[in-house]
Image (tube, rainbow, N blue to C red; front, side, top):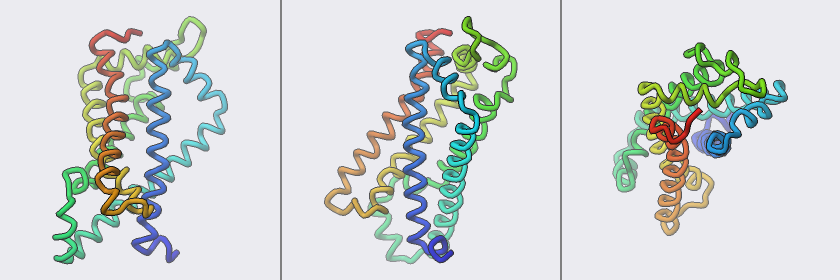
Amino acid sequence: MPFFKSTIGRKIVMAVTGFMMVLFVVGHVIGNSTIYFGLLNAYAEHLHALPPLIWLFRFFMFLMFSFHLLFGVQLTLENRAAKPEGYVMKKNLRATFASKNMIWTGLIIAAFLIYHLLHFTFQITNPEISSDRHLDVLGRPDVVKMVVFSFRNFFISSLYIGSMVVLAFHLTHGIQSFFQTSGLNNDRTFPAFTKAGTLAAVILSLGYIAIPVLIVTRIVKG
């Protein structure tokens, strides 16, 4: 389709899929935060009450992620191959570590996501502590114990914390780019959107990082 072959079209797809994934990141961290109130097992039970719906949602997010990753790599490679001198000079005026390394932070997040799914969703990497094999007092899969035992492992908690730092860098530029592609950003609003994107990225990453940190320090217990 011409739309997907054009640079503008693919940037629009990048913006839309990125926005959908940011919404998912927000919803996911809110759901994870139920562990502070002893409600994570109940949240997980309700979340998986309708298997067809949850699998449909997973398929939708898989498509969003796949399109975002595919077009992100394509656009990055095309930009590097073209390298018009004037464009590069102009771009570098606002280039940041996050903007210059979007392809790498994106690939790291993709690798982490695969591990995360194998760890917590499909429960393959650490079956001995899987929630499906251990039930709580109400007979529900004990997600809380699975999370707590996982993050008490220094390697696992370090991997998650490091990956969330990478996510923060990716979102810092990604959120600002969404407004740029949407036509809402300009020279006057650029500083405000940049700060807003950075703030949102930091808050979201800290929301995820807080859980393993509080578990490692024994503030949150299973």
